Image 1 (cartoon, rainbow, N blue to C red):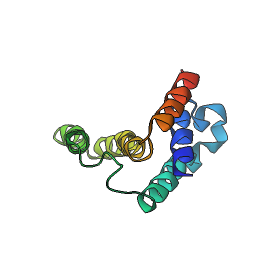
Image 2: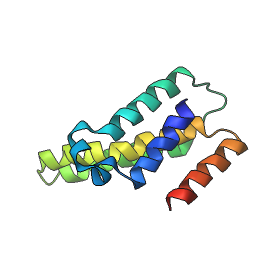
Image 3: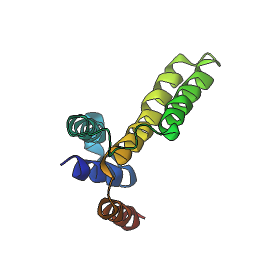
Image 4: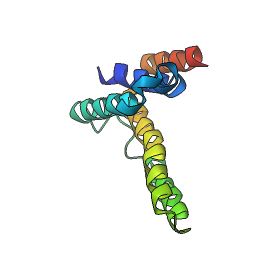
Amino acid sequence: MAFFLTLLSIALCYFSPDEIVPTLAPYHIQQFIIGAAALISVFVFRINRGGMNSTQSVLVVAFWFAVVMSVLSKGWLRSSLNFFLDFGVVVVLYFLVSLNAFSVSRIKVFCGVLSLCA
């Protein structure tokens, strides 16, 4: 279920519900799907199969912090919150893929979804 929600949230990055049906924009459907995928992924996570202990995971979080601090240093408080939320979707999707795409068959399905979206 977590893998399916991860694939759905990645597809929604390309085909946003806000652009297809503008009346759905205030409901932030993509954030709810990403939140549900993250919640389910945390419950089914096993340390030995995920890629959470890699250097890339630390660097992604550090880059997220650097992006927000770069905007915040210019005195743009509201824009830094927007960057935090917008780039947070990318960071959460990175962690969802690293948690859920742990076998070759799942990586093939993931690549197929990306190919179909492209």
